[in-house]
Length: 112
Image (cartoon, rainbow, N blue to C red):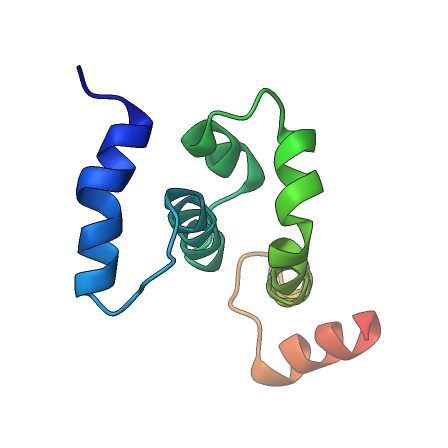
């Protein structure tokens, strides 16, 4: 019968030592997997499902610090959406004709 304790002692610890990672635990690999998922852009619900947490709140309690970098990216995307919206509105005001560069700049300046 394969049990966690047997696997760790008989297989995992030897493999970690051979890789020069003596003392590495399976739980540390779990944290690494979660960190890599977050840095690759996974949202909290995806990480929750991957780790088998009961709720996204539990995932955030443990890994909230990893999601802080998402705020910068979110702010950038929101700013891009705001500028795109201003350009679209300027284009609509032009009644079907393409907005000129100066109209786009003017619309973007109005929002800034």
